[in-house]
Length: 110
Image (cartoon, rainbow, N blue to C red):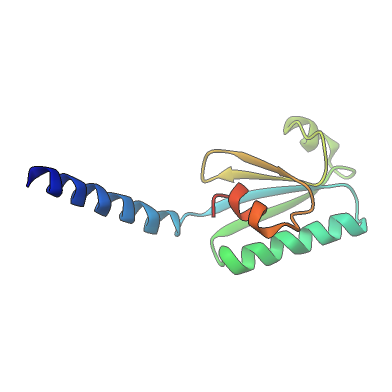
């Protein structure tokens, strides 16, 4: 009986963790190179993804490496476009235009 109670408690803790992760706030930084068609497509893709899955629970900063190259150096950006998920942890980097939604969702732990 004690083992069943322990399993039940563990299940409740796990389910509570799932529901709280759904309410977490996401801090995202998207690095792009100018206003190219690829940059614009990437911005549209991440905005759509956030609207569908993170409504009201995200902050997205779009950084043009031509306008602020120092930020790219500080964050060690080696390819663009790059999306950095700063929180909730762990920090993740996604490179590409985010057109493969399943991969983007997995990368953001959604």
